[in-house]
Length: 202
Image (tube, rainbow, N blue to C red):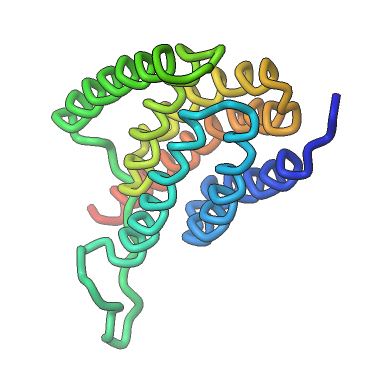
């Protein structure tokens, strides 16, 4: 097993990212941006082309997520009053949006699978396409602070853990194994926060 500096560095950043996400800290977007830039280089080198291409989308969603979390009401400028603006609240994804994004995820999976199978030398097109498609949906749900984003990441993390071991990226593979545990814990933490917010509003 060869130690890859990018594997180790992105693993450390990824651990910091998931802890910040668990705590619903806005700083996760900053850490995520650095992790994504380095991830582009790592994934390209390992032939994970879908993951590599996805990082550009992640960077765009990082900017959007940072803005959304800072301005939950959609305001374009920081709050100028004497009080700090209320943070974006954790909520359930509306059923209509859940159905729409499930269909989008399925369509993306099939499309990316086709592209990887016919236009690249990928040896894992099904799994790579699956994690990519779900991640595209998951990061959007995260930007809106929907509780169900954690369920998406559980599925992504389980498959990615296996995939990265197959691709000899052991540190990040182990990290994704840890992500599964943290994603489950994060779901219950965010749900508790959401219920507490509802109780306070009543």
